[in-house]
Image (cartoon, rainbow, N blue to C red; front, side, top):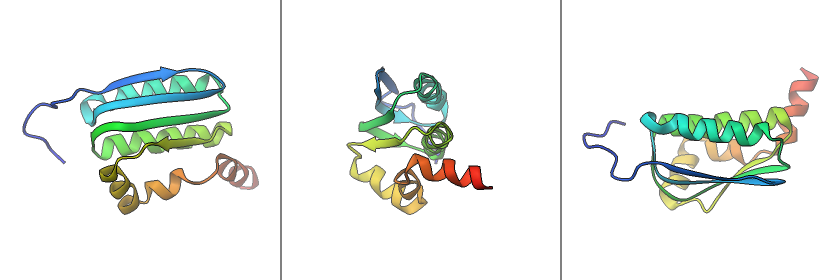
Length: 120
């Protein structure tokens, strides 16, 4: 997807650390700012929380790069045994997650990927 005008709502990422980390995302998640979220999610996972929740209620746009960041977070969480989930998914994002299959991926438990990797 390309956009002919600058993002009207820049990406804002807030991280609440703790046993159950929460990363809140607001605005447009696209190529120019995807690394901001990737770094925030990686940093949160490096702190080894019991779980990581990504709150996307105020997300206004996502492109394929943004989806790749969500998959990256799920993969990192799976490798570390940390469940990664989405919270407050807006309808436009739910449709995209369903069409791409990313929603099904994110609904898998973290331990499934870890145990699959151990048996391979």
